[in-house]
Length: 337
Length: 161
Image (cartoon, rainbow over the protein chains, first blue to last red):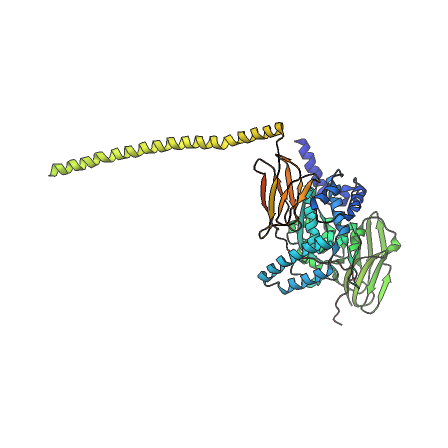
């Protein structure tokens, strides 16, 4: 009985900061190298793939890591399919029969392409992670919802446009996004490039919720009534590099902000690791020119980053946070007299 | 006439309690049969449990092995190249064009076969004495296909001016 009480206490105590730091005691090197060794394995025999990936690993976290890493480094984003699917879904959004028919059609096509070319869109990634995990007797779910990026039509998100995963490890649920972790689409050529981003693996739910909102609220993994679809739509834009540099994004809470001339606004973040003060910049765009500025009173204490900024002239500004060369987040400021 | 009539009435009166008695007799019979039925039912239910545990025990001691064959399809047609694997191992095979398979190795009762096919929900089947021929239908869960990609383009607000 006391044992159970301690376990419950342990779970409660660690519930608040669900993230990869729970597994600091595990070195994922072995899992990663197994994933690399399985590079030539195809998708034509999933049980065999899972066996190769997981049978030599001790913990569930490592087993999941090997599966996740393999998927993220072997499956490509299919940009053409993404465009086509998005167009059809928009077109049929008020015609459930046609949408269902399209879904059945595209489902077949997606799995054929996934098997043959190892290319897919989010649902394919999330499905694959779930299937492979289930074959390894891990409890993994697909989460459908809304993903928000700089290129999504932010104000017009009315149907789910993204899928990711939730995984249960040692009795606790964690979030990850294999699609966005796998790489990026070049903004000019629209060609996909593998570029694994470890920040999307067992991410803190608070950071994740800034640009991921599940259809079913329970997959937020946060018990905060203040967090709604509306606050999600108002949130700042964060980028892939936010996931490698930040643990928490605290303020500004909104993408669009209004303030007076010379009024101070506070920016606050929790960093993954302490960073030199001179690495922190704001890129301020007034609609005509970009200006890279060093913000005022930058304080980095332990892993907390705080600084202030004020605008001396009225206008409308797009403001981007840079840490080193990494683009972290974007906000807009309307500055009044 | 009058007395006759009353007699008849009396007769009726006599008949009535008799019929009630008959019914109650039937009722008792029904109840007894019901009870016997219940006892029989309980024995039927409880017996197979014993039988099963006995068999499992037997199969464990004798390690009886069987050759497993089968056919795998979806709602419409046989499925080609479905992976059939013994759980926790690499041992397995895949289905032919007609959806048929023969597992390459004899299996023990209690072994679990995993059926996996990209796009369909994975199925697991525990081997028992009825598993010499497995007919399996795989279903694809309600997957809603969506996908947004992350194009790392810096955000640019739409300005009215």
